[in-house]
Amino acid sequence: MLLQEKMQRTQFSANEQLIVDFILSKEDQIKSFGTPQIAQATYTSPSVVVRVAKKLGFNGWRELKASFLAEVEYLQSNFQNLDANMPFTEQDSAMTIAGKITQLEVESAKDTLALVDHDSLQKALRIMQTHRTVNLLTLSNLNFMAEEFVFKLRHIGKSATVFPIQNTMFQEAAMMTQDDCVVCLSYSGESDPLFQALGYLKTNHVPIIAVTSIGENHLSRLADVTLHVTTREKAYSKIGSFSSLTSMSLLLDILYSCYFALGYQQNLAFKKQLSALTEIRPIDNHIIED
Image (cartoon, rainbow, N blue to C red):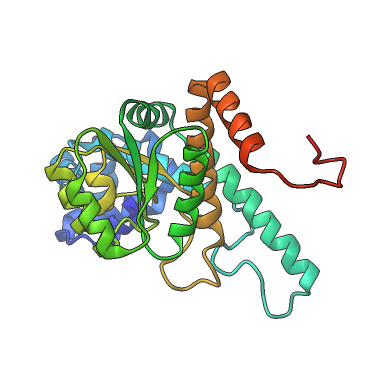
């Protein structure tokens, strides 16, 4: 859940609501306001500003302001004049739709890169590097993406697995140990069937890398580290999950590529040797001929 959504859904007193409405109306202009200025503008008091921050899960106004401004900056960047939920209309021609979907994917990629945090990425890589097996947990069509990530890792000699059958996922999660790690994919971060498996993982001290939307959600609270995907789509009111799937695929490619680079020459040699041994086929196209 985005912070702005949480502010709109949380129950506040009348004075607290005045402050919340003021913050939401100011957006990025709130940068120049401290608690005395907000209290004066809303005819309340600094202590009420602090109460609002604490109700939203922050220690004080400075912490709330920093998180709010970061979210506003993200939501105002990229995706100008482009709706991730309804990127084309019924009047658009086939070539117009092709252009709009291409633009959507380009904007999604740029948006994803803006969300990549160096420290979080490095922590995720350390977890993958220091644990025996990388296990992918997800649901529905995201299993196809997980399978591709597992395919890449296995073809450089890293033990990796995905569990597309839900009951198998629960059983395997219950058998994992602290020698294993998990990458969990969920756009909403609120996919209930995953949390039975995640409960087993927490009990067994298995580190969890979450790939999910920005804001607060159940998955990110349970994870040891979170990598954020572009968060522009509504849960249901959309033509397709174009933006989120593009973002998630790119994040997994980034994670794989950075992991590959940790042992670049060794991984390249392993992959080339495996390919030469197993991918024997005639190639007539001089562009792809090796």
